[in-house]
Amino acid sequence: MGAAARDVADRVEDRLFAAQVAERVQALLPELPDAQRQVVVLRDLEHLEAGDVASMLGISDGNQRVLLHRGRTRLRGLLAAEMEDVR
Amino acid sequence: MIRRWGRRRRDLVCRDAVALMSDYVDGGLEPEDRARLEQHLASCPHCTEYLAQLRATIDALGRAEPDDLSDDAVDELVRLYRQWRTG
Image (cartoon, rainbow over all chains, first blue to last red; front, side):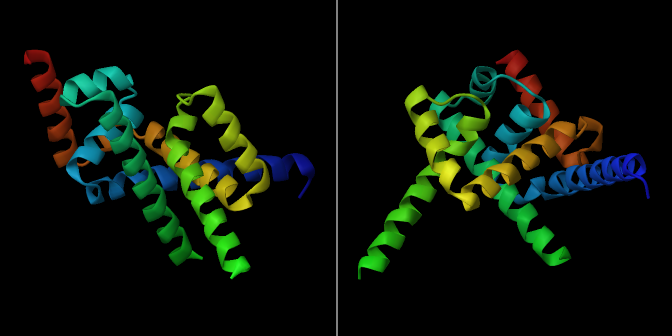
């Protein structure tokens, strides 16, 4: 395979992998406690501003940040565990 | 004894680094904290890998379409938006 073809193949593989990860991360969302899931969905999936999410959920900015941190961290851990299983 | 002490100190630093990563990805860290984290990342391959996984998780969430969410997740989202609008 030439360099250009290899480049295309790599990009296709990256895209397929990215699509798989996106599918898995959504499937894992129900694993999060309610408050963490709500903040993660509104911030990272709906792309709302931090202040809007805090006011929407009736929580402080600090609490919003903590819930987002915990939710993202938990999802990272769950995904990493799945990747380990695949290897 | 010295070795154990050293390991405990490093663990604490990595834990602190992880605690800052979600805000770091959002560009929300104070300059001093950002500099401390970047200094740690420059010498810690584990935290660098962890940060890459966290970014990949957030990217994957960002690629998800609300249409791809489970029925329960969509219901929850609609409820939150309605509550916000009427609240």
